[in-house]
Amino acid sequence: MTRPDIPLAGVIGNPIGHSRSPLMHKHWLRRYDLRGDYVPLHVAEGDLERVVRTLPRMGFVGANVTLPHKTAVLQIADHQSDRATLIGAANTLTFRDDGSIFADNTDGYGFMSNVRQGAPNWDPKSGPALVLGAGGAARAIIVALADAGVPQILLANRTRAKAEALKADFGQRIRIVDWVQVGSVVEDAAIVINTTSLGMTGQPALRIPLDGLQSGTVVTDIVYSPLQTPLLQMAVAMGCVTVDGLGMLLHQGVPGFERWFGKRPEVDDALRAAVLA
Image (cartoon, rainbow, N blue to C red; front, top):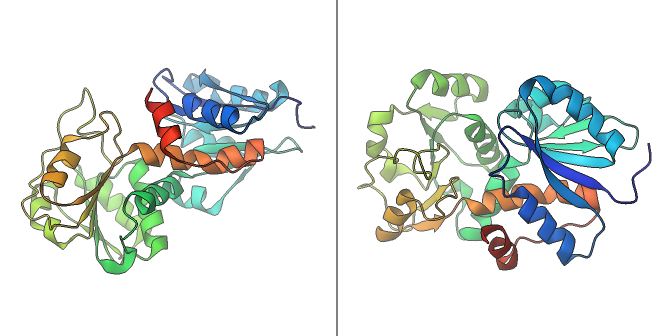
């Protein structure tokens, strides 16, 4: 296989109409005057492997993967990064010149880059991280936090069994906190991270007592619709440093774009405006 004259990439999901990834990648392609295109791809679960293996033959150099395919696509790939294996999911595929499929997970990279940009004074080694939720995003974030040197991860999930499963995978650095006891450990956290969909438009609110939040604590929410979730609004009122969830989406797209189109893109205000338009 040889690279096509006009490289194509896209995002695979079901549903996919809500994805902002095409806005992001199209903005970068225009900004850097690069040939190529990026399109949304609605793919049913039963068609996933056939579609993924056909894309390179259609001129695709890679694809992002979103729900519900992040776990299944890892089994389709010919090669996978160590972090994708550890997390158990992939969100970035690269179709190599020899026709093989390489799977990676850049969600943790996106999360850490977003926090470092939005809260540059946060030191990962300064104290525990309180992680709310135990789904796929939480797995990627926990790996990133551990790699950055966070000394302890306080993990709370509405279903304790899912939190126990993460602890079994990631070890003693994780301390499980019952959901109803979250308020009692908030004051211990140097950073609070909501990885659940609670607080998202159309979803129930995230109802946790925040009385113990300390001024200067970093609070971030991976939800970006609305951009300022009730959690972030409350944290601002308490003097915390807040980081919205849009930046995680933007930063996680950087490695894939660079691999596919040969240019490392910048995450800046112009990009945020384009994606929010």
